[in-house]
Length: 324
Image 1 (cartoon, one colour):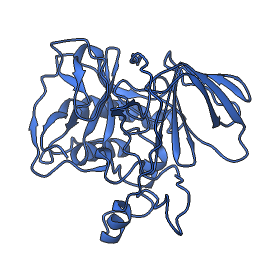
Image 2 (image 1 turned 180 degrees about the vertical axis):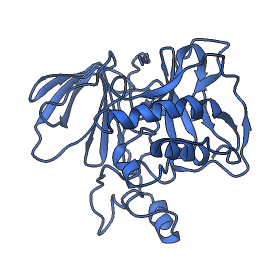
Image 3 (image 1 turned 30 degrees about the horizontal axis):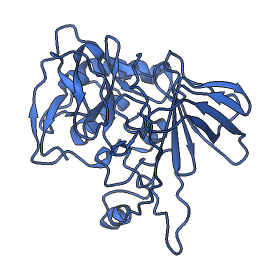
């Protein structure tokens, strides 16, 4: 559903180059397979340039998106109002993901100042024919090497020209998927300033196996309190009596049994909610939505998941610290 954007803040983005060893350690300890871990890459002798294959778990192993709920975390029940709606955004108000190749045209994307970046032109390899998503947000994710570009109200003008009302980008391999407050710099265009890839349901991931990261939630705008919390760098809640703030982590307690009769994807979402939870990163109009990759899945799978979420999402509770 429709989400609102923060006003632009001007800062020139500094260059960050962080090398992380946690991925290789995790593989050595057997916690995850190389297919699900991030690539070992970056500066240093013998290392390859950072790249990403769709279906891998995005962002660094140390990111809060990729860390399970702590065993000693506590939970607080949420007073979801009677008649609250829950679902999944898929064919509108959720981004498609496109992975660039060397043969794709370099598109000059003109954008205004936003999310700590000055107005300018981003040069991104984008496949021919790709445009923004259905809905007024018109969002888009483009993965080019080790960078995920996140565009809002993206409009393709020609093979090599486009505009966007907002632009942000993040290192998909060594980054944490969150923006930063000082100096202010967004990783993506959602209200919390996180990358829109963080927590998105991606078919290449769910086809491989379990979901091994937290999911993202756009909360019904009527339930969003002003302010932000945790690693969110912005919030657009307007209701002082709302249930949650952007940046909060929700989860289903590990002791709660799975509802019977869930679809295969619904079962994976339920297990991910118990293990990793979900971060509130945006608002939606009249419904609380999980988001799924727009150019993947099929209608039958999403219809089944939609039905599942009417039973799963109301079970989400607030995670109290220690949350990670």
